[in-house]
Structure formats: structure tokens, C-alpha cells
Image (cartoon, rainbow, N blue to C red; front, side):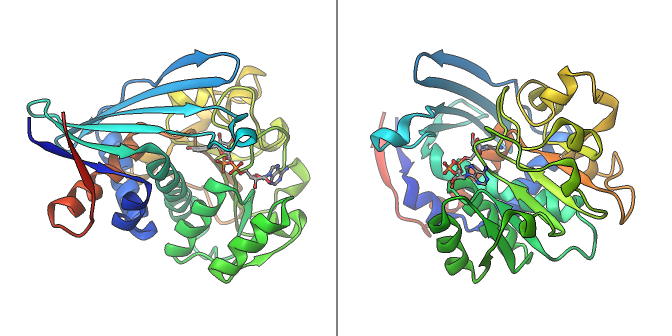
Length: 315
Ligand SMILES: NC(=O)c1ccc[n+]([C@@H]2O[C@H](COP(=O)([O-])OP(=O)(O)OC[C@H]3O[C@@H](n4cnc5c(N)ncnc54)[C@H](O)[C@@H]3O)[C@@H](O)[C@H]2O)c1
């Protein structure tokens, strides 16, 4: 067996910049919606009392990946990240292992990237002001990807002033109050989802909301009534209906499947996007293996052309 490259956290971020991540994630949604890429449902493995593991497979562009990733919410208290894991990349032609990749860096890039893709596709054409609610790890990457896609300058809110201030300094954006951030044209929420940060009274004509924080059942960043009032979009209905911002309104009978459009269908032109400049649109991101696969493509390319330094192992 030949040696295979191992992409650590820094190698991933050195090989794929935010703009490339946005372009590749957009491409992944188009390929999946066109039936070119395949993604079986993710499998959860509970690991009580601390958290769970998720196995996320996808195939496309000659590759097959399996992302094996955690969610251990109590980890920061002992100095460990919530999300950790590895992505195994194999050839879909003959099954050969091709690479091992740090899942944390890929998750950060692809999660940030989808916020920019959804904003490009679903926000008003003249949208320019952008706000982030929750400036932790994934909020910061959403901001970097939105900035790379030429949104902003933006406003940032986090109850931890260092989180908002540090990111503001990095991007040349500003920290603000939650109410100011919610007045922006594009608002991206990336909080732990323990309590709603968007209420019905915060909705204003022409607004676009990216809801990234609620990625499992029981988390929500918006009041049910606020969700009910928006034009609704999601990354993948099967995932979003079971574990995302749309789950609680769906289970309460306040929204139906017919009201929700997948982002890929909008990107391929199979379904319409926002109905007009006054509409309020909401995109629910739950995080898909096709997004991870989309980031693995430029990674392998960077390794192939020698533009990134990686270590390697022999299996
Ligand atoms: N959709 C996806 O694909 C995806 C991917 C990764 C993570 N997530 C989810 O995103 C959420 C955030 O993850 P993270 O890794 O960035 O966490 P993090 O702990 O790094 O950051 C969360 C930030 O939210 C802030 N916050 C807490 N309560 C808030 C409130 N009421 N208003 C505003 N900000 C608040 C915290 O101070 C913190 O800075 C989690 O729920 C995680 O599961 C989703």
C-alpha cells in the first residue's frame, strides 16, 4: 500500500481559503441536487453521558469519504474541542485509501462556506449589511466566508465581548448590540441554540436569515412563530426535518414539507428562491457530508500540485 497524506488542522486551512471553500461547497450542492453525488443519512452513535459520534458518508467526483466526528458539549470545560474527528478519503474507483483529514478544520470551513452560498442565493440582490449572532468557532468562519464573498463590512454580537471584538479586529468589522445586528440584511446565527435569539418582532422586510447553530433535535435559535413567518429553505430535508431549526415547528404542526425548499434545488434552477425583495427568507443548515466532500477535492488537488506540506503514513 503506498503512503497516504495526512492533512492536519493547519494544512487544511493552508490549502483551502474561504473563497475557495465557498465555491467548492456551492459546487457540491449542485452536484448533489443533480444526482451526481450520493449521501446516505448520517448515523448517530450515542456515547453517554458526554456526547455522541456521527458517521457521515458521501461519494462524488471519484472520491468516497467517511467523516467520523464528535459532539461532546462539555469538552471545553476540560480544555478539549466539542467537535473532533477524522475524514477518511478513498478512491471511489477501486476503494484505495487516499488521505486522512482533520475533521475540525473541514467542518469549520464548510460550515462557514454554506452561510455565504445561501446568502448569495437567497438574500436580496442589493443586500449588503451582514450580521453575525454568536462569534465562536463556526460563527467566525461564517464571517470569514461571508467577507470572502464580499458581504460586509458586518456587525458582530456575542455575549462574550472578546469573541465579537477579536473577530471585529480581524475582519475590520464592528461589534454591536443584538438588536443592531438583527437589523442587517443578512443575519447569520451560530449560537449553541439553547435559547431563541431571533423573535417574531425582529423580522423585517427583505431580511435573510442563516440558521447554523441548531444542528440536532432540541436546539433552536428562533421562536417557532418567527420560523413560521419566513420563506423556508434548508440544506437537506431529511436531515433538517429531524435535527435542525425546522424540526420543532414541523413537529408542532406549524410548517409542512411543502413550504421548505432545498438550497440545491434553488442553485440548479429546479425551484425558485426568494419570492421578491420584501420577503423574509430563512435557511436552515444542519451540516452535510457533501459539504465535507466538497472541501476534500481542493485539498487533494493542493497535495497533488505540491502547494501544501503534509505528513504521510503507510497503512
Ligand atoms: N450547521 C452546521 O453545519 C454546524 C456545524 C458546526 C457546528 N454547528 C453548531 O453551531 C453552534 C455553535 O458552534 P461553535 O463550535 O461555533 O460553538 P462555540 O462555543 O465556539 O461558539 C458559540 C458562541 O455563541 C455565543 N453565544 C452563546 N449564547 C449566545 C446568545 N444567546 N447570543 C449570541 N451568542 C451566543 C458564545 O459566547 C460563543 O462565542 C453549535 O450549536 C454547533 O453544534 C453547526
